[in-house]
Length: 123
Image (spheres, helix red, strand yellow):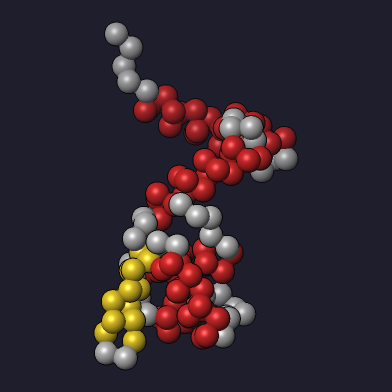
């Protein structure tokens, strides 16, 4: 899965939210400043070329549908991010945020509780 540029990721976020749509719909939902229509059209065609979208011709226009689920992209992105910046260690990632005071002790405890709930029972 090829990594997305920021404009590509912004377009995909909208398309995931809409579960597919037309360029005009994506443009309306992008944050300001919005790119020109032709720039967004090029971005969306790049996403199609990369295998993130498929298009369906409807009259004189195309409707684009995501081929990759947002959750699948998020998992791949996070895995790459943690590998590139935190030596493949989620512990280092959490430690980074704890040291920078971006995560509180209460939030860390919530994470621990979530992990504990997902563990299979010990026999």
